[in-house]
Image 1 (cartoon, rainbow, N blue to C red):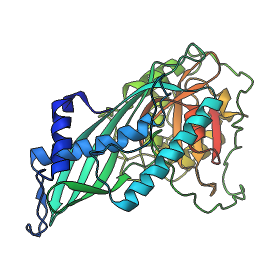
Image 2 (tube, rainbow, N blue to C red):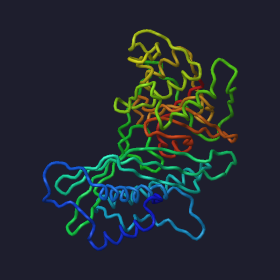
Image 3 (cartoon, rainbow, N blue to C red):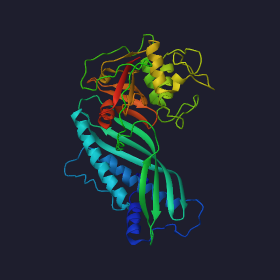
Image 4 (cartoon, helix red, strand yellow):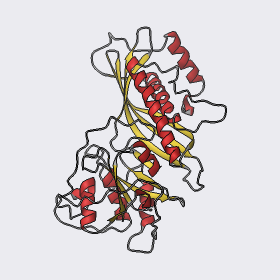
Length: 379
């Protein structure tokens, strides 16, 4: 969906400008050093990114009566031959994901994708553009108590080339976030699978991903821990980070740092000691234990200290429980997420950092990574 701030006259002008070749562009003979793009050019880059990302998002939305989602990129977005081929493959894979989601009882009735340019530089007729995508998908009420929406915010880098006669050609668009792909982003090629011997550390037991699973409810408040407080914390800071804690986005990802904060908000107590001993778990403002920020170390701490136990199925997780994923089956856990909502039909919804995401269904994670190894923890 094109952001409202770009509709409708600006879009018409953009399309006409690209068609006529009158679009402002930087000449290939421009200075060799990088120059910041002017406002008008940055807005053009935002429209181009919005066109591609909105098309991806719409591939996941349920077709409305009388409408067809052709899967073709908007006419205003000129792309290189290779990127056009890649995007056609991406749309096809996202439609397959939509089918897998439908089999798991999930669909979306609407979507809104908005793009803002964070930084754009032009060097000798080539542009590098950093953008932030904010997307909201509306859940279809199939079971009746799904959340209203799921939201995510993610960053991309675009490269473009100025074409003779004016206009820009998009040559690549790449995600800049770690963690699970956004629901509208195709999954990268699988890595080689390495068998884990499971003998070195308390790695835990992988959980089944078969849906549905026998219910295993728990009280949200009134016990040792306040699970409602954990969920409230995670949903408050899923996008705007708590300034009381450092960010680890550029140092392996912020996902486990984020769940540690939420667990502390719900009553988990620190275990002091050396930073490298996985049996310790703490954060003091200047430093922290490895288990506070590391996905594997967090699991080792949790299981060795009996803070949590493995569940037989990921679909047994409830509010405040944790799901971890080993995406490429190499024996190392790659990502940590917290359940912040669970429907009465037994669907957990996850909130997490590293591709910052709010109430994404577990079904959508599994539809994106059906061959990954999952671990579920009852906290």
